[in-house]
Amino acid sequence: MDSKAIKDRATRVLDAAKVDRILLANTNSEDPNFVYITDLIGGLFEGNFLLIKKDSITLFTSPLEYELAREQLGTRIGIVNLDSQKKVEMLVKEIKGRSVGINGNFLPYNSYMRIRKRMKMRKVVDASTAFEKAREVKGILEISRIRKANRITKLAIADVQKRLKVGMTEKEAAMMFENRILELGADGTSFDSIVCFGRNAALPHHSPDSTKLRYGDMVLMDVGVRISNYCSDVTRTMIFGNDKKRIRDYERKQRIIDIVREAQAAAIAAIKPGILGEKPHMIAQSIIDNADNGRYKGTFMHALGHSIGIEVHDGSGRFLSPGSKLMLREGMVSSVEPGIYIPGFGGARIEDDVVVTRNGAIIL
Ligand code: GLY
Ligand code: MN
Ligand code: MN
Image (tube, rainbow, N blue to C red; front, side, top):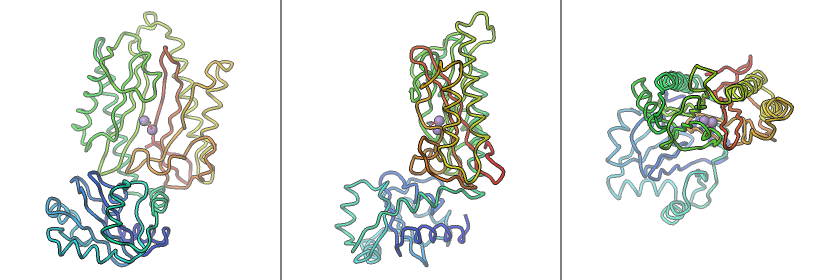
C-alpha cells in the first residue's frame, strides 16, 4: 500500500470518528484496525501502538519488531523504537490531555484502564464504528487478495475431496487441507477448519474429531485461508461415493444439497448495490422453507452472510441477515452461505464469498 492509500484510510477514519488523533494499542494479538492502517504482513507486533493524526502516522514498536517494520514500511509511516523510557514519554506526551479515539471493539478493559491511567487522556472516544464503516467497502488490492485466498481455498478443498478414503478421520482431512494451502501459497488458515462427516454435518460449528468417514456420508468442509492479511471463507458439501445404490438415503441427501444450492444461487442473483442486506437472506430462507411442501422449514437457522476482509467476520455482524437494514454498496464483500441442518441425519451448507459490483454480485 502506498503512502497516499495509507493517508486516505487514516483521514477517513479520523473524520468519521470526529477526533484529531486515534491510538490503537495491540495486546498479545494485533488489532485488525492496526493491520488495516499499516498493512504490515507477518510479525507479531505485540504491545505496539499506532498513533494516527491528521498529518502523520507513527508506529511505536519494540526492538523485537523494529527491523521488520522498517523493512516493510520504509518512510510511509513514522517508526519509533520503544527501547528507552524517553521514547515512551514521547508517546505519552502525544496523548496526555487530549481527546483520543480508541478501538472499543478490541481493547480489553484492563489494558484500557492501564492506558488511561498512564496517558491521562482528557476524553476517550470509541472509534470502532468509524473503522467498521471504512472497512466495509473494499478497494482493488483488498479484493484481489480475497480473490486469491478464495482460489487457493477452492483448489485445496477439491484436492482433499479427491483424496478422501473410507476410515479417514475428520482431523486427518482437516490436516490435509491445512498442509495443502501452505503448498499453494497461503499464509495460514483464516479460522479453525470445520470438517464434518455424516451426522456431524448437522452441526454448523462442529470441530473436526476422530469420526471416521463411511461410504455414503455427507462431507461438509467449511474452511478458509489468509493471504497478505485477507481472509476467505468457503463451504462445500458432497456425498462421499459414486455408487448411488449403495448409499443410504441417497435421494434425500442429494435433495438437501440441491435445495441449498438453489437458495444460494437465487440469493447471489438478487445482490446488487442499493438493496438492503435482509433481502438476499429472505430469498434464500423462503426457498428453503417452501421446498418440498415445507419439509425443511426452519432448518436454516443462521444468517445468510457476513462481511469478510481482514477478519473472517469483518464488521458489526449484521450484513446479509434477517432485519438487516444495511444498504449494499459497490465494493462490499460478503459470504453467502445458506444451509439445511437435520439433527441426527446430517446437513449441507454451500458458502462462497462475493463482491458487490455495479452489475451485481461476482463470486470471488
Ligand atoms: N466459517 C464460519 C462461517 O462460515 O461463518
Ligand atoms: Mn464458513
Ligand atoms: Mn462464513
